[in-house]
Length: 92
Image 1: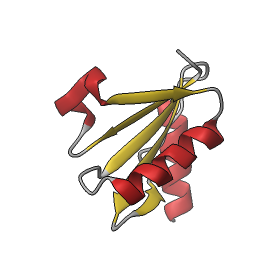
Image 2: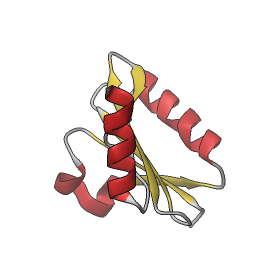
Image 3: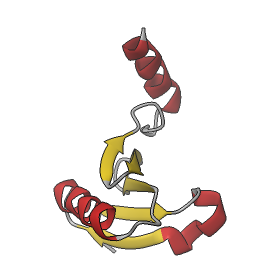
Image 4: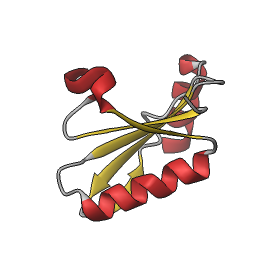
């Protein structure tokens, strides 16, 4: 498996678990391009995650009306408390 895992689904990760793993990529840019393609072609997919297996960083995206929107609050790294504080500071 490549470094960046792409997970997508209709509801949430807890419903599908590992079945939500769709592809893996060597770089994050290709994973994001795949999300854009999925957003345009699959009307039932409402979320996506890019998981960096080397750093444990996760980027979370919502797919709304074929538009990919990064959810900065839910995206986190292996330091979740630090990421949460950063998100709260950005919202202030």
